[in-house]
Amino acid sequence: MKPTAKKTVVKKRTRKKSQKKSHFKKNIFIVLGVFLMISLVAFGYFLGQNDKKHNPKQVKKTKTVYVAKKKKDADTNPIKEPIKDHPSQIKAKKERADRDTSVSASESMLAYRSKKPKLVIIIDDVHTEGQINAIKALDMKISPSIFPPYKLAPKSYLLARGLKHYLIHLPMESSSQKFNRQYKTLKTYFTKEQIEARVKEIRALFPTARYINNHTGSTFTANYKAMHMLYGILRKEGFIFIDSRTTNLTKVRKIAHEFGDAYVARDIFIDNIHTVPSIHKQLRQAVKIAKKKGYAIAIGHPHKVTMQALASAKQILKDVELVYIDDIYKRK
Image (tube, rainbow, N blue to C red; front, side, top):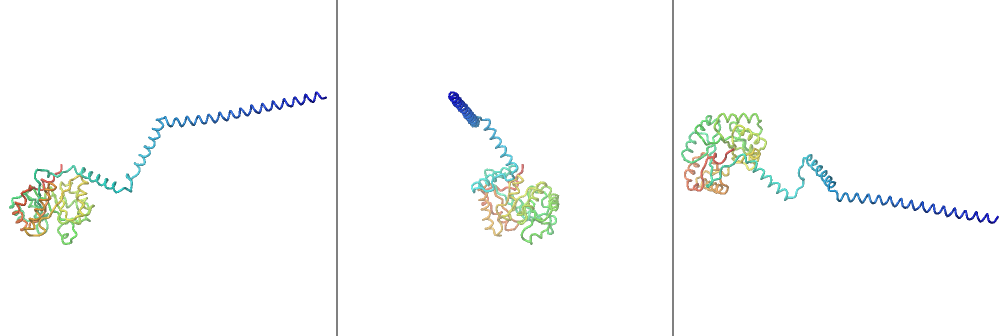
């Protein structure tokens, strides 16, 4: 019986060793499998990172998508530039706008570039034959600005016959009710049809006229909407508007540039004070302005003293070329 028991013990030990070997091999395979999987994952990650670094097509593609998206946003956003700007940016934008405005005015030009500064003298409020004759008697290049017909001068339009150089002195609304009572004064509340009718009437009365300047008109020229409407209608009828600049709030400069025209306006009034010395003083100032910018526009009125002052101003005007308004402004 003893040998049998011994044999049984040996078999049990052999079985246990076999089981231990089997578990050991199994564990090794599991560890190797896990290690292999980790290695593959790590290797794949490495390859992915390497592709991102060294694949220029992928980088370019990503950049292109971003730029296209940015452009799309810009096209659909009505605000093209940041709302909040640094003061230096605001200044730069204003300078660019000013340059753009000067370029937009290239369709018309100021013909004042010459060896000698030019001076235009306009005489407003002309409405009688005697005033026209007084201007002609000066034997100077003076541009009369003639009132359209009204109660005191129903045939004033006839004064333009035979004249090559003249303006129409158009009554326009001012801050003074006294002046606004003048016949057919243009008002800021007029409709487009009313303004068109008046301008066409002016064209029929003065078929050869090219230039119009405002009589009073401080309220009208300061009203952007009304002045813009009038400016466009005048242009359509072949008129050029010269701003008498009866207010610092005038919108004519802005409107002229928007239409692509040069802005032409009065530089100085010469006879606000009705004395020869005062008028001569203003004429000297006009000459000074002309020397500074190449030309100047002075406005006077058909007073007897103004005619006397002009007749004795030859020495004052020797350094400028006296010209008609036609020699200052021309449209291509």
